[in-house]
Length: 353
Image 1 (cartoon, helix red, strand yellow):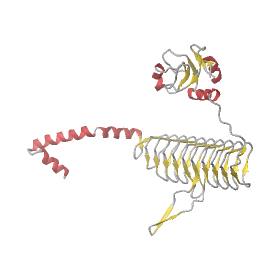
Image 2 (cartoon, helix red, strand yellow):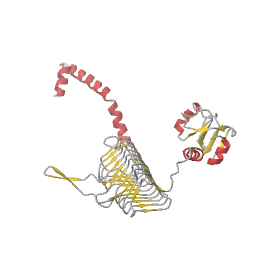
Image 3 (cartoon, one colour):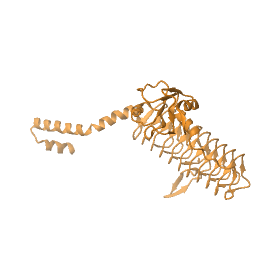
Image 4 (tube, helix red, strand yellow):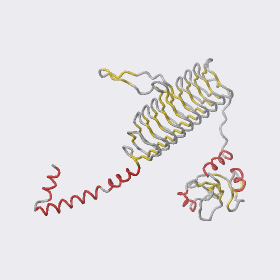
């Protein structure tokens, strides 16, 4: 890439502030940028890095006030603008050839749409349907009667079990399993007997699912991931869960069965959720939060068990003062023992008893 700043501004719909003739030769993050690079600032709390970055210019939000220095491109959303720039000027995206690789196994009873690409060692079973322009990479398994929507991209070693439905423009990264059996057993005389899981998983449009995610099929009906939701790596979603639209589920989250997650919910890393509860719309559960009961909409909960963030911070502040409080209690015990004319240790022993 070698363009002037004003040429780049025209590409991303921005406004130059400063020298528009600066030549840009690359793009990078604000910490990693080298001379000649263009970088971006999306979060105002990192504005101090503008003094340290070696970048030649910065993509920045309209209205954000920063000390004069480097040339800027002002845009409405720096992250989106910078992503667009990378798409335009970065490495070309891989293009996968249309058709079925000679080493793939596709049932004659499967139905493939127009422009589909099926890689080597992929297996597509009887009754499966693959939508137009979908990319099925090497080693993917699509089970009997499963449906994959248009323009989906399934990375190597994804497994879509029988009867599951994937919407359009869904991205599923390597090693993920959609539709494995729900974890259901009944104990009879000390023996665990398997409960049949005869439902399915439905993934709606524009969902992205990371690597090594497991989403279990429902016991009856369906486990559903609604449109626009993004799921990070190493997430477990149990049977009969309902995950609302445009939610964010970060790495190592575990969600137990029959749980309902609302719209625009954020579950931060390593959150655990018990079964049969509801997390309301627009709520956030902080990292490592343990959700043991339903959470109302528009909430921010943290801790184990998860509770309102304000309450948790008060409790945690008191917890951090425990060493000083213990010292203070011992001092008061010693003073009380002196007033009563007895050794302080006697009182301590009596207290411990």
